Length: 346
Image (cartoon, rainbow, N blue to C red):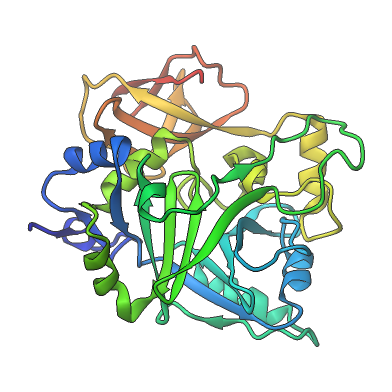
């Protein structure tokens, strides 16, 4: 089998360490879209947070409602700056003794540093665990059949502006069912099932599952199609949660104080974040090459946003997630490099 690693194509990529594709990226995408494929995402950083007070402690530090987090539950959270800018994003998987936080490659050190700084006298022992645990992802409509018994992922509807106290029920706003699997954990998520397994058993688990392999390129294409943001790709140093569609899955809008809460509340109740996440379709005439992350989106000669993740999709062609100024209308004529792009109105 041909295996092309991310670093073979881009040595400077933050995603180095996992396969980009196995010889046929479009076929791999179609597998993820119509059946099920297994994606190696073991380049993600992992933080372990054991300790009796881990749920209440994480509740006070992050955007998510976690006081009722219990065994075999998963969700998402953000860490914000004092001004409400997104600094960290992680998925949480609770096994009854430890909350496992998996985050973007290279982001774990910053997240762990913040957690250690905020320990004080709390009974928690956060530690770096990337060398212990690896993330694999089963993606596609058949993922739940490979790991049966997991309830579908649930994400609460975001309440409207000026909602009454109590309209958002206590508890996490995203509910990802978890079960034990091969010495680790399986977590149901919107795109399928994530496996958080001992790194030493990764090869054995892949062989045992016997699921067709797909590279990270295919995974990213499906993620972009489903408008799922990624820290560091659809965010910059001034991104607030509402601008990158993190609110529903990772932010509880009616919980106690946390760093950056005032900005989140103010923007939500005013109803107009300065920017928004959008899916762009390229005309496919000027180029068929995905633009680099951070490429400006231009209207009438002025920059009105930036490209986050751009991909070749097996069905939609060249598409990208982009962060655009709020005043950019869906029908505006936009350019990315020499390419004309259109905003998907969905």
